[in-house]
Image (cartoon, rainbow over all chains, first blue to last red; front, side):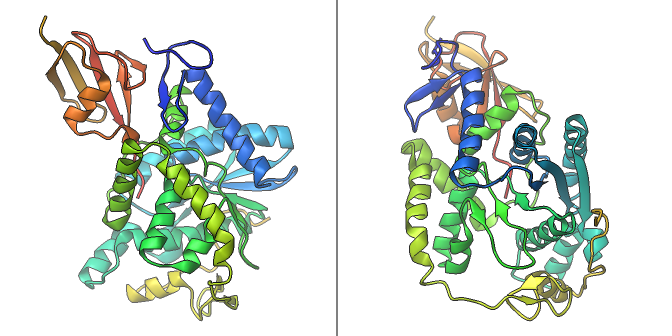
Length: 319
Length: 71
């Protein structure tokens, strides 16, 4: 039996990048400490703030919600949960039930915004239209752009001071690599523990950014949290290739993911001079903030022969 | 005994498979044989989450839980 480096109990996790073995209790404590440390180090949350957390039902967002509940009790913050129902049959319906159960057990207000209600079509329907129109775009593009936009709008209508997304270390490093591969300076520049764009945007924060995906999963399992562990049916493409490459790199060379993150964090201030400044406007079609004449969501909808049905979400209570 | 026999179950898949391994095999050896990357899974050894360097014994049950789900 291999023992925990710190307390001698049976080890549950080999944190190879740090050269230590951790038991269930020490792993749970360590994850909670890293979450608190990220909040303090980057000043992500302030006492008394109203926080919206984006929850899909997957391990990362459920863990974020549970950790935030503890934080909010200590710091006198208000917490609300937002779920975007993209309409992925056999996937999102299952995870939605898990979010509801977690929100109910934690006593958190939970709001659901659906693609169908706002855009007039589910992601499944959009994917079918995109195939029929033979567009080059895959469902992840529609999902990513529209989900981000709706999350921001819901958080804004709920008068949240911050929007928490549950991106973990793996997500962040994958995004860094993806933007390198695409030479996308603008998106690369937006990465980091906090992003506070301009008017119309709720500042987004990532308190799990320095916790590896495996540790988030272990935290959920060891604490017995109810999480949805199914794989999204639309997963694929370059994201998956980059993810697999990074996981192979980490398996062969532990600490690679953290090194990529640290390197990016040191380089990021230099990007400011490269990224062009842009003027923030309102989308002519839906009124949401954008740098173009019409926002990316409306542009994608137009390409599918659809249009946005509602400007305001209303389902999240506008207070 | 020149080899040990372990049962492997992948969570989400009802089929179990039996594997023969050398007498000093670890979970990491088994994962290598199965082509799993340790970064993408959690392993339960006879019902307990353990490190991949644990030694296996004859009759052990290994459950493999994939944790990478997102896009």
